[in-house]
Image (tube, rainbow, N blue to C red; front, side, top):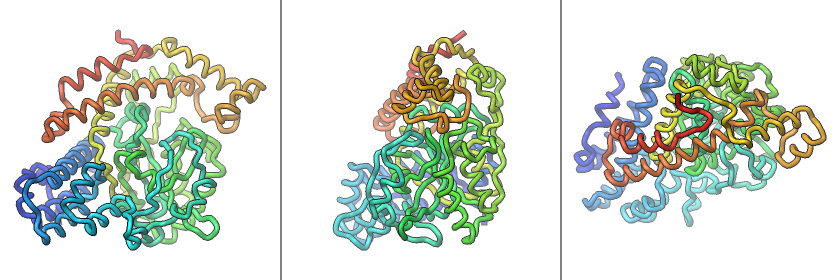
Length: 482
């Protein structure tokens, strides 16, 4: 059976579809199925990213229409409405939850809460479906006080609905080795992936596993961070504070027999990986990039490892990066999993943050354009960059001063990232500057969405005032115009 045309389905008038609840449910199912069936390797990254953004925007608009329409729902219609919302499968903010409660009534609303990871009070039968219902102050790629040794003391982080060798959570079945392509809520995180070809799909990749401690199983997401590899509770990683949007991909060779090996390898990486690796193609298993974690995991389990198709291709991008000592131009990017014939789409978690996704996309596009056209001048980075470089050199040389600096910063000569000191000294400064522009852009996109509520993707991406704001704000001293 051929896949329904995704674009045709999305473009149907929303108001017309809402006149018949059963027809609306069928419509949402049709769009979900059309998106699932997309031939990702065949269509290519550029087209898939467009489909992703267009579908996320569509879900946001359908949700608002469902919650704010004036037509009263009958008792029967409310059951269908709940099914529509469960099938739409997007997170609701506090205001939207209040509207949903008014429309659905408490019992149906509790089921909706559980489906988006919120534990409803007074419904113990929904506890497993809702997951732990506890957040932790962890940010993607950054250190936190919440180590596995600390958070595993809370038994709730093992509470999920079982599904085979994994769990079912947020409407997705997760199995060991699954790839999570994540748009994380760390503005500036896309500084690397925006420069590579083909088009970036997400700024980060991470991997599902199940860890054990004292007889308890903990579903986790394995990700790289500043000091190596760590496990993050599944519900925390997928929460609206941590991520805007996540897609899940599964290796076509995966069988139940792979689960134990994947889980054991993940547990081993946490202890053995010393630090982050800027070279995603490096075969050294003691330092890893975010994508390399998946390659090592799948290889350990005997599955065919994904091949790198991405590359930092543009000549001027290569020239600018080389000025910072970065010459790893074969660039294993998150999108390579999506484009591989060895991986299949297995689900998505949409936290209903289209403003954040579009804001980052717009700034990443402009940053890429500037990096292609302008000449980077390392001397124009903030003075802190020179101080950082000196400190990194001291830590790497294991001098007394370096040991003192490392004690405060949490680094030593073993866990410093593997890569060029020149780049490490300035990368967080660059991310902070770009992140500030992204914050402004997100606010502008949110204002436009609130003002019109009907904007099409093309109108938002080509919005004159928003793009002028980005052009004015993305004034990076170290990337001066000619």
